[in-house]
Length: 400
Image (cartoon, rainbow, N blue to C red; front, side, top):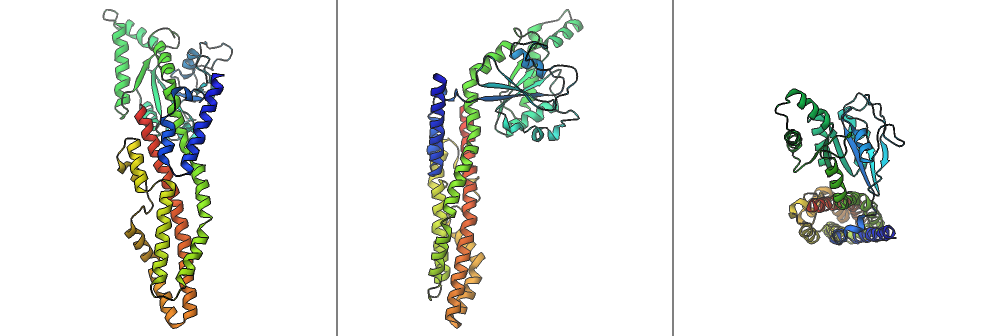
């Protein structure tokens, strides 16, 4: 019953988000997320990708997290050779809605580093656990940077702690100190991850053969404690894809009205008044261009309100804009560069041949208005996607 209620709340929240985006209120779209309770994210599934180099103990870690040993029914395949060619999903028996994905090892002949992310489509996962052993490697650094650039989060798990401790005990039995060695391993991993610009990395030193020792209990406890936050983070990451078809729908509706605007511009330009063709085209173009910005919620006032809401400088949002924005002089310059000469020829023709001149003026105004508005409607729709993605990114960062 509780899960069903969470699903209903989630569906209602998504409907509210979609409606806000369609009506051009990006602040309401973000508020829709900000006002959600932690419980409302319980119905969202979480896909956790377990990755790392071949032989690092990824499959053994998954088995340990699921309370299984190699050879048990449903256990992940383990072995010296990494023969995986496809990710394999394993449901977490303790955490509802959580799926652990056993990924092929990175840096193998089958999955070289430079194509690993794209070939396995790692963007589809919500969270990552990078598994390494012996020492922090360049492959780990590459994965950490890539995950961070995609706006995602990860834990770094240093596996096979029992083997490291056993080796230290054999090499220096007189000075052996288990906790000191474990802390040295943790610090080496933290330095390696932090050196890649990743702040405050979560590092766990574990042995999959001894799931009740070292940091393994802490790993499970931390994952369970952070689950609502991770689900919210994954939900925010999914929202740009939710918003995109809504933005396309709105663009299509406005696009269908452009021919009427262009026809009005054509009729206005055909009136035999010197300069009216150009001025009419300019003001019609300017009015609707600014109208599109306001309609999608990316005009100056809306952007300022959105920047305040997500606690970011306005410049971070305006940097996402590539359309003309709301500067009249920019619109005027564009029209002068694009159609100024054509309008002058049209008006000259009108003076010599009134009927022909009226046709030329109207035709130039119609074509110019139609294609320029189509181009900038598409540009403003793209701006909306980028601005909303940036605002959602800021909201994710605010929650960390």
